[in-house]
Structure formats: structure tokens, C-alpha cells
Length: 305
Image (cartoon, rainbow, N blue to C red; front, side, top):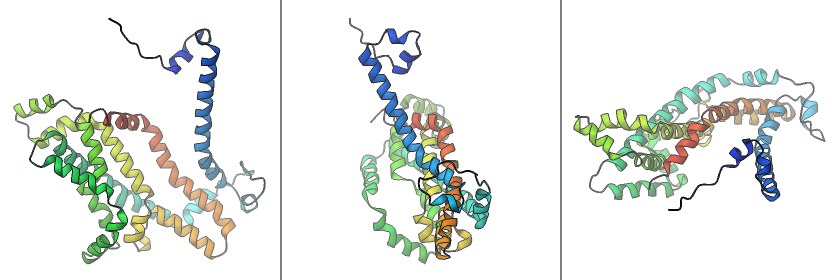
């Protein structure tokens, strides 16, 4: 019997002693070009963030100069606290995290997991038809339902509150339902059958058996939803018109508009970059520390159709 072996990963070849003796010249050139392209792409992706961070340290004389100043001397570190305190960004941060991002993330994870469990692990009449209808909702543009939803929420008295942004999250998200369903289908049915024999209900099976096994997928859903709500500008712009209820995205846009209206566009540029850096940094760090779980959840989700 012939056993086929998978090719050795390139990183294992590079870490072996005398790896250059086992590769031909063409293979060495291909490996060098591959890593050169990867490093170049990584630097190109990091370049905008580097420019934003360094621009936050500039003063008026360093903003519109040619050639551009990449590393300002001297660096004005006071731009960060001055820009953050120029508007009540602490209040906007509280609104974004406590009133919007965290409740919306919790609601999306719980509701999507509950619906996905029903589609993946329980057999009932019309299950596949309703799942197809659920997927069809992803093809409806948000602009189509925007006006009817706004009229509905206005009649309910929810405008200028976070209820229109948070409450729908507790009714599931079609994309996350599909993703979690695919993940649930990779878990053997024998685990659920054994729990049912022991007298466990479906909710007990979900929360005590299934969810502990799908933590990577739940982390992906939570990360996606938190990032989306953290950066969301359009939703709060439509439903939140009271300044004390603004989010970070609305406060950042107001900083840009206010500085332009009073004619201090040059001074506003370092302030704008400083606040943008502060707002972007938590998401970058969150993805950096959770990237292993994130990649694992994305990879395992599509293992079984």
C-alpha cells in the first residue's frame, strides 16, 4: 500500500540545521520571494496606522510640509490628552462600551447560539425551510428596512435611546446563526444523546455540553460584533441625536466638523489623528491577543456542511 505524505511546511524546513543543503537554488529563491512578498504586504498594511500615530505627535509646522515628516521632532505627546479632553470623549467611551457594544455583543452571542442550536441539533418540521428564509434575509439591503424601522422605533418612543441599536441584537444575526450552525454540526450527536439519557433538557445540553465546546466560534462572533459596534457610525447617527448620548464615532466626526468650521483645520489634524489612534488601538490589541482563537474559530466553522 502506498502512503501519501503531506509536504513539509516551509517554516519547518527553515528551522532545520543545514536546510539550505536540502533545497535547490530555485526552491530557495521561491521561499525568499514568498517571505519578501509577505513582509512587504504586512508593512503596507501597517503603514497607515503608523502614519496616523506619528501624525498625532506633530504640530502645525509639521502637518503640511513636503517632503512629509514621518517621525516628528520634537514629538508633542501632549496632543493625546489635549485632544481627548477637547470634547467629552470619556462620556462617549462610556456610551460606546456600556450602553452599546457590550449589551449588543452579549445579545448577539446568546440569541445566535440559541437559534443556531435549534437549526443544527434539533429535528422539527420546516427546519430547513426556515433556515433558508433566515439566510435569505442577508440578501435584503439595510437601506430597504431603514425607514420602516425608524418609523416603528419612533412610534415606540425609542428614538434618542440605545434601544433600537441593542434590542434587535437579541433576535439573532443571520450570518452568525449560519456560522454557529456549521460549527455545531461538527460536534458528535452522541454527546447530546448521552445527556438526554441522563435527563438533561435541551437548554442544559446547550449551555453545559455544546457551548463549552464551541468557545472559539463564540469568540469569533463576540469579536466581530464588538468591532462592528465599536466602529458603528451610521446606527447612532440615525437613532441618537442627543449629544450626551453620542458614541466615539459621532464624537470623532464632531471634532472634525467643529475644527473645520472655526477655521483651525491645521490644528485639528494632529488632534484628529490622536483621537483616531486612541480609538483604533483597543481593536488592534484585541485582535492581536485573540488572533489564535479567531483563526481557529474561522477555520473550524467550515469543516462540515
